[in-house]
Image 1: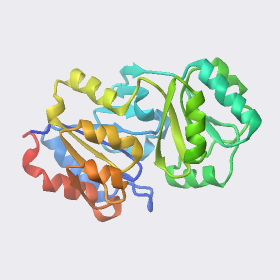
Image 2: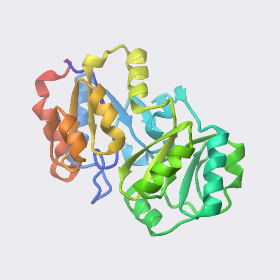
Image 3: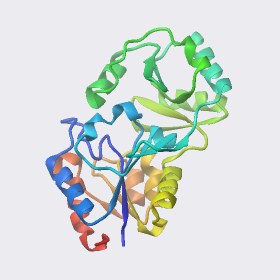
Length: 260
């Protein structure tokens, strides 16, 4: 039986078209809560980007692709930051060639530079409207994640130099750079230990490259219709996209699998 479900946000819970959670999804999650199923978010967003989830009773949050995990009571169960030497590498690359980077720090996010790619992301997330400015201070403060607006080829070159980091994409225009260690899978296992369920009792929903390991880890995995082909190939079930009741349909499809 499934006792816990993990949800990506953008492109899964939240529609890329309306930038909202469909009513059908909200109703389906309410029904799961009534059955005693634990609900968790597993997202690339930081804790300052969760307003879109207002009104839904999630039990815990895996944010920044696993670098910062906390319960609904604000108990932090995992925190991880990018080593200063890797920050130095990126700052050095930005001196050679300017490209937008969003640095997630404790106070939120700071950008070095904005262009249309950043504006496009803000139209999707409603959470990336911070003005650009001096980011030299990021060398002196904890940095949990970096959004780097680079091509896949540039990403590969950059990651070869940032030895203590990994990267993933959930949108074509940028990659999330995270410190090695924290992952969505780690967050899943930490919450399993915290709440008392097993890997065999997990279900996960996602649509992007940063969801692949999470879906492979869950007992039942759901790929959204707008998801990547690689994700769909590994999923237990492929549902419709958020605009066509994908989450609700998948929950209904596996209705007899949930704890009562």
